[in-house]
Length: 314
Length: 259
Ligand SMILES: Cc1cc2nc3c(=O)[nH]c(=O)nc-3n(C[C@H](O)[C@H](O)[C@H](O)COP(=O)(O)OP(=O)(O)OC[C@H]3O[C@@H](n4cnc5c(N)ncnc54)[C@H](O)[C@@H]3O)c2cc1C
Image 1 (cartoon, chains in turn orange, red):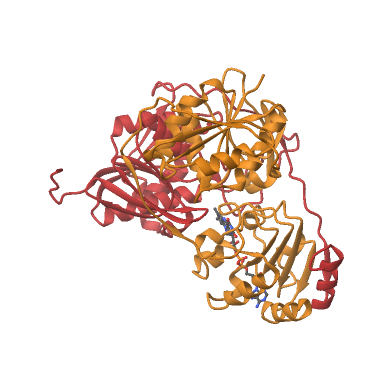
Image 2: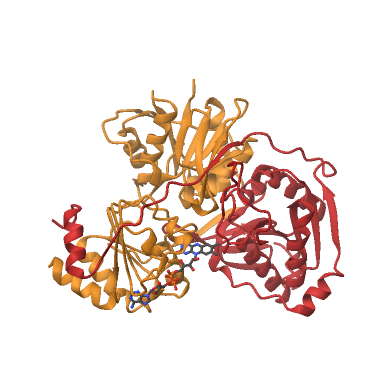
């Protein structure tokens, strides 16, 4: 019988929603529930939060000063030690999980299934390749543990209603001293909704033209309660910080509504929004490729469309 | 305290280059769904690896490193991408010839052998390859080598045996400091790679390119992941065009938004 361990992601005392999405994935592998491991310096709060997720059987809490920052080189040997009792080890396909899980896999002598998007059997999964232009089905042999990052946009977060026990764990692993956390610099999000979990996302591309012009998008987003995203071109041009990038090399998101302003619709960008409920594109070029995938398209100048939208929604 | 003579920080940088379908190519599945069409398709250095090489060359030009070695794994055709790397400015190349699929764990085992042989002070490679999109090899190499990893780098500074790396993470930017030797994987905003000039292509033909084999390095291909099927993704349908903002708002309200 499969036994699944999920590596929780948390920050600022809160569990990241990606963990609840991993739980949904785990339940498709083994319906009876999964264990969650939370590593931190003081992670009682996120551990307690994980215990309330429906489908979580047990929460392992590994608290030690070395775990204060999520350094892959420090966390991986602890997770590899805990993995001994499990057939599957899952982490989210966020930058936290992408950094950490391959290190765990290599310590276990196993490969990794990256961006697991559907469970076809306990050891059979689908995942995207070539920026989502092809989907492959992969199989992991019985002789090896399954290590995977879960494409969070493909799974709904598990709901509340669980009451798992939280146990302290002390995996015996030697921790390296060669890697040190220096600092974290927040992005430009401020009080806006989180891009990865928001129901509504307003996104701007090179067509927005400048950092100052992005104020127009921030204002409109605030009006409708949306998070703000961007294309790589907008990030590279310095209009917005890197954490706002949506796409193959940015964030993969699945909001109910995605409104793209001045974004051409390059394949690498579209990879990030495939699972959006409704895609709306506003572009002044009627030939822009984004109109090929948008559910609703409007040919127009974003600088007149956005104020008009605000008036219409007022 | 470590004695620092002001000499170079890193003798050698090893850069891993993967040959991939060029990012401008719209890939097609083979008619029998056994993979993607690569015959007659433009192949290039994985864009992230190209950024890794550019960074290595800049470190050498700043006097931080002495030598830049490019390495690749794959069929003999990979020589083209290694030659391009030499034309960009790398000093020498190693191709580990292998005709079958190379899983990231296999690649990491090969790079480990090369790292043991070459003793680089720094290994640089792209954060992911744009064909399999795995984002694994650098982390796996670091694990097997027992050395630090700094993934998704957008800034790299080297001083006195330490690399200070700014990483692009979901929450913004994170700075970590790692002891050398270390593995650093590159993100898109680290630099803009240079263009290759014609005389450099000529010069590159004379630079050394050594060929090794997996077996010669004592590496067995990693078992594990087996790809059993390929398929096209579910395409999104082209939707409707509206002619003005009022029609757009009406459509959105009809779909249940802003009511
Ligand atoms: C390896 C690799 C990875 C990549 N990863 C990503 C990624 O993760 N995310 C990503 O987004 N890109 C990524 N890219 C880049 C991608 O290929 C495109 O270059 C990028 O998405 C283009 O951004 P854009 O649409 O904003 O700019 P452009 O393509 O320049 O499009 C700007 C659009 O704005 C429109 N416009 C201009 N002015 C106005 C106006 N006033 N009103 C309305 N419309 C206007 C124009 O008609 C045009 O369609 C990647 C590329 C590579 C090679």
